Length: 307
Image (cartoon, rainbow, N blue to C red; front, side, top):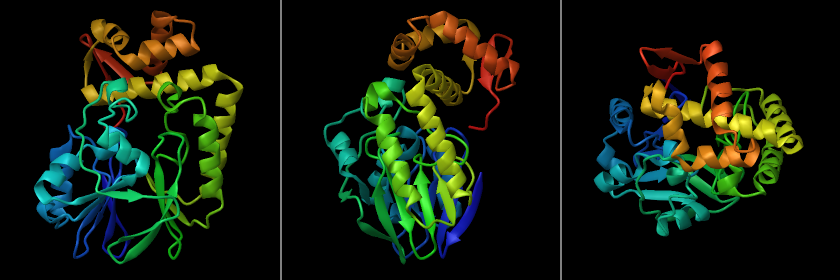
C-alpha cells in the first residue's frame, strides 16, 4: 500500500489487485473517492483514521462506479456519518432498485451493501473535492455507470477502471451488453482529447505516459472485437484470479465445482468456448501455475498477487 499527496490535502491511497484504489480529502469537510471492499473495511478504516480523518466526520463519498471493490465501505461510513454519496445517475438507479446483477455483485458472487445515493453526477459536471474542482466525464465500458474525474489546472486524471497502465479492466458482455466494447472505445476517445500529465487509476500505480496507456487499451479492445475467444480467455483469467484473491485460499479439489455454481463461469464458457468447462478450467489453471501466478500446496490453491 502507498499513500501519496497528489494535490493539497488530497491523497491517493494505492491498494492491491483486489481492492480499488481510493482518495482521501483532508479538507474541513472530509471526502472520499471509492471505499474498497466490505470484507477489508477494517483495513480501509484504519488507513483513513491514521490519516487524521474520523469516519463520522466524512461529508461526501464519490464513487467512480458501483462494483463492490469500489463501494464496499459506503454503507458503513454513511451509517456512521450520514454523508452524501454521489454517483452517476445509472449507479443511482442500481441503488434505488437494489439491482445486484447490473452492479456485478450477484453475477460474480461478491459481497456489498446497498446505500443511499444522495447526489447524481452528470457528464461534464464540475464537482468540488475540498478546494479542488474536478470535471466529471461519463466513461461507460467496463461499467455502465463509470465516470472519471479530471482536474484541468493540474492536468490530473482520476481514471478509475476506465484506464490502466498496461491492461484493460474486465469486459463483462453478459452483464453490460453487446455495446460494451464500442462504449469503451468511445470512452477512450474522450480521455485522448484531454491534456493529462498524470493518471491515478482504479488499480495499480500512478503513471504519466497516458498516450501509451490509451494505445494499449485500444489495441486490446480491437483484438477483442476481432477474436471473441481472446476476450473470453482474458475475462476468465481476470475473474478466476479475482475469486482467489477474495477467498485468500481455496480447496483444490472443489474449486472447479464451486466455479461451476457461479453465474459468470459457466455462462462465459458457454458463450466463448463451446461449453468446454473442465478443459478450459484446466488450461487456465495450468497456465497460472506454470508462471507462478497461482500456487498449489497441501490441497490448497492461492494466488501470489498482492490482494
